[in-house]
Amino acid sequence: MFKTNEYFNGRVVSIAYQTPEGPATIGVMSPGEYEFGTSTIEHMTVISGIMNVLLPGETQWKSYKEFETFIVPKDTKFKVRLQTDTAYRCLYR
Image (cartoon, rainbow, N blue to C red):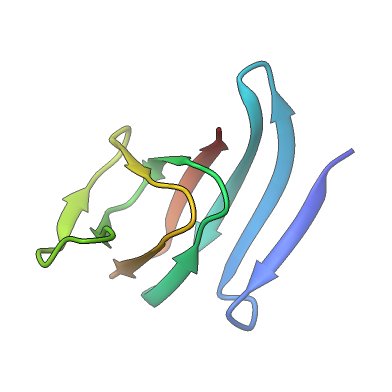
């Protein structure tokens, strides 16, 4: 069964599901800046839009566009900035 999650007063919404590769979410984020914490390794793929990301230990923001993936280590925090509605897929490992 699917599970829906809402964060930041509904500005980030995701649907959790199971894939052959493991648990995943598909979601949409409204424009803004957000900080997320991880409990597993996360493989984030931008589906539409552009996601500006500040990964743990980095000092420079990096932009990811459609079909680009970045990996976030386990037990860390990372930040994202969005100028437009942006869709993503997150695979948890």
